[in-house]
Structure formats: C-alpha cells, structure tokens
Length: 449
Image 1 (cartoon, rainbow, N blue to C red):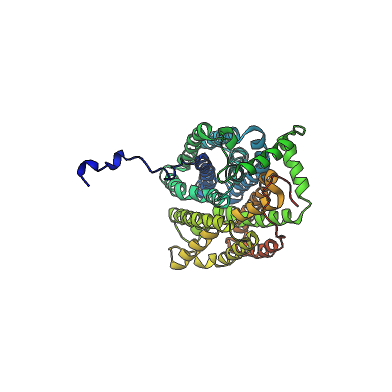
Image 2: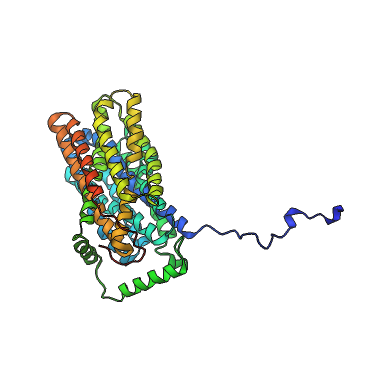
C-alpha cells in the first residue's frame, strides 16, 4: 500500500455503526443546582453549634435561651417542609426555592444587628426556619422523583449528603471567622452564600422535564404517557390550595401504620443527629477541654464520611429492602451514642476517630430508604408531600432533642444522660422499622395503602 492511500485520522469519517455521543441529560444539571441549594441551606444549620457560645458570651444569654432558638428553628424548619412541597407543586420549584434563599440571606444578615433574645428567636427560629424548611430534603425528593427514574435512590443519596457537604465546606470556615473576626462575620458568610445560590437557582433551575421537552432520566415514552395521563386526571379536579392539599394528604395517609412508623423512626433520626450531635457536639467537646476549632473540624469530618455513607445508602436502597437498611442504621447509631462520653477528651485519640468515622457513615444514611418507603407505599403523586410530613417529624424530634439536651447540660453539668437516652430511642427504632410491611415500588402516580 502506498503512502498516498493513507488517511489522516483527523479527516476520517466515523464508522456508520459507531454509537453517537449523547449530551449530558438536563436532569444531572438540575441535580447539581439542587445540590447547591441544599448545601446553602445546610450552611446555616451547621453554623449554630459554632455560634452558640460566642452569642452567649456577648449578650449574657443562657444555654437554654440559645438552644431554645435553635429548637424553634428546627421545628419551624420541619413543619414548613410539607407545605413547601405543596407550594412547589402549585407554583414551581424554582420560584419557591429562590424566594427561600433570599429570605435566609436577609435574616442571616439581620442577626448582626440584633440586641435582644426575642430577635434571635424571630430571625433564627422563624424566618430562617421557614426559609431553610422550604429547601429541606423534600426539595431534593421532589427533584429526584420528577427528573429520575433510573438511579433515583443514588441521586437521593447524593442530595441527602448535601447537609454533610455544607458542614464539610463551611463549618471550619465559620469557626475560623467566628474565632478571628467575631460571630457576625460568620453570619455574613452564610448570607452571601445564600444570595449567590439564589441567582443560580433563579437562572438555571427547571421545574419539570416536560418544560424542557425531555423525559426523566431513564424513563420510557410509555411510562411517561401513563404518568402524564394520571397527572391530567388529577389536575382535572377542583383547584385546591397548597395548605389544604398538604392537610388532605396527611389525613389520608395517617390511617396507615407505615406512615406512623416512618414518622416515629425519623423523629428519632432528627433527635439523634441535628438536635443532639449537630447542636451540642462542639459545646460537649469544649466541656471535655477540647478547643472550638478542633471540635468544629471533627464535626466537619463527620460530614466527609456522611457523604460516603449516604451515597452508598442510596446505592443500596436501589438493591436492598429499605426496612432492613433502616434497622441496621438505627442500631449502629445507638451503639455509637453509647460510646461518645468515653471517647471525648481534650485531645483527639484513636477511639474518637473511630466514633467520627462510624457516626459519619450513619449520619443521614436513613434518608434514601425512608424516601423509597414513602414512594413504595403512597405512590409518586403523594410521596413528596408524605415525605414532607415525615421530614417534619424529623425536625420536631431535632428541636425537642436540642432543647432537652440543653436542659440536661444546664441542670446536671453534663451531657451523659442525653447521650444514653438518645441511644435507647435508636434501639427502639430498630423494632419500629422492621414492623413496616413490605410493598413493591408503586411506579404509577396512584395512591398507596
């Protein structure tokens, strides 16, 4: 063969049977924007443990006062979630999340001007509680259910890890800012982040795949026709306000044991994570002689392992019975809480590293199987609002846990009883999770049990 017959690879046409290169599905872009919104909401929630002591020292407020404001935030955050889900169904995800981010930014910035405890409760408790509650994991569940058919559990696992990501990225920075420049600088960091993400959500978020002429990732045209027909039938009924929709779903599903079992287990999940560890780990470590920045760094490390644990939980949720996963997660968390008093000290010992790794892997691994059970038992149409109510119980549990742990510390000078009680609740949750009846996934938008 002569040289003039050679073909330059750059000029060669592709073979006819070469598979075409497909662009990235819009669902993954929407997922990335959703993750950014969840991280922004998590930034404030992860900052409260760092800000408690500086705020107390400046204003002379008690631990009960500051813990009460955090508890109010957690409760309002949780109770907002089911109504936010209904609002997103009515007015669109993009609009509700953008408004919520702006509210968080304004309220976080306004805390730098407060002078009285009631202002802390209004800003931390109500305004930021409502704003972050509108971007709770219900937001992630709605996006995952709308935009994904395949890999739905994995995507929900990634969304669940957003809280950990917020801790990982911002908690050490917030602790440094509070130590070096005062707690007001830390509050302004949160405000700036929320404003930046509000612009991203407002410009890049899309409410549904159909709005962009797309199918959900992994969907077929036949399955989407069935879903669209079910949605059309549902929309043909009378227009109902978001609040009435959320209440109607609650009344309907509250007749089932599955709903109450999910409520109870997630209530304990909130108590033992956001309420207890996220709020009180840094003050508890300080009680044992550990520096604030060191304790904040350890809590951020919990976030690192939480990312791995929650994404792995999402992957497992696509393959393993969700009830079994919940039993394993709550049992492991109960064991870890039994050990925390023994491993805390002025220095970081190997036993404390074991706790950080173990607890981190388990932190919110409960979310993907809980979302899956909501979908399996109550159908795609109601699952977002059902999970909103279940998530509300999570945050009410967190609020109660934060207040009780603060009261225990105030009255006894130690967190020991708080750790033991939370451990017992986790072991009880193992039995409740196993009592949930098994059910196949409901692919249609129909109702559940």
